[in-house]
Amino acid sequence: MALRKPIPELKHLDHVLVSETAIKRRVRELAEQINRAYRGKDLTVIAIVNGALIFTADLLRKLSTPLRLDCIRASSYHTGMQAAGKPVIVDNLKLDIAGHHVLLVDDILDTGNTLSAVRELLVAKHAASVKTCVLLDKKARRIVPFEAEYVGFEIPNEFVVGYGLDFNERYRNIPCIGVLKSKYYAPKL
Ligand code: IMP
Ligand code: MG
Image 1 (cartoon, rainbow, N blue to C red):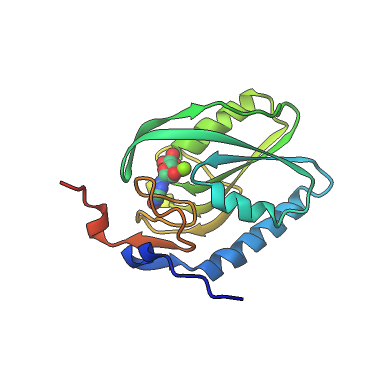
Image 2: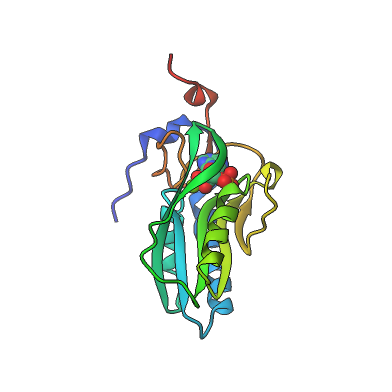
């Protein structure tokens, strides 16, 4: 097989926090846990896009339980790294989740604002159960108390990009999770 061409933006990373290999291994382990937990049940996976897109795509392919997929959009008014206050949840769900077991998937659990708001919405729609799976957990940043049932990696309080996570909509296609060199966070004057 031909080697994949390196992504030029990899050079923007100061360091890698979670390698592509470590992500692959952990996604497989999370999927095994989820398969065990939902054995014999029908699952509805809800991905919070855009951030959870890549993680969800990889996770889904390792899930063997019968499932349906839907997406929900949550946006905070971002200026680069800082999300300002309560997120706006665009409820564009197509599936009826009343009476269904829901697994909510997001890229990162940070302040907890997004996941707690989305979970509330799903509970209000009478889901049979709502559990949460996140690739990354930045515990130190929590404002709203929130624990995810499935966590890929706990990471320190650093802004990270790659594997679906962005800075100003860039870097989502980097296959690992890393920290940008500070000059790339600086606003263009
Ligand atoms: P919350 O603060 O837990 O509501 O997280 C809101 C959203 O902010 C997450 O779903 C991510 O999209 C984004 N976010 C939080 N921390 C980071 C980060 O380190 N890199 C990229 N996006 C982040
Ligand atoms: Mg997000």
